[in-house]
Length: 83
Image (cartoon, rainbow, N blue to C red; front, side, top):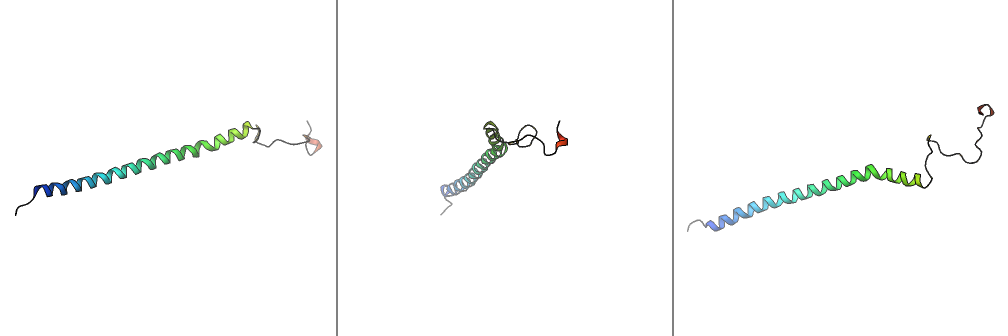
């Protein structure tokens, strides 16, 4: 009995489908990981600044010169520092 061409064609198509399917899955996973990495980078870059903005809008955080606001008496500790 001779070689069945349809059986060989089926084997070739199965092998080709498996290879392309593996490549499609790999490309899909790589693109998903890239998207999640991009979103993570955006959160890492901008989220602290947004939180700081809301803190400053609510009246908290450091003032212009970087020190916290003084509470109570604004007089210096030593009298020779009076202006």
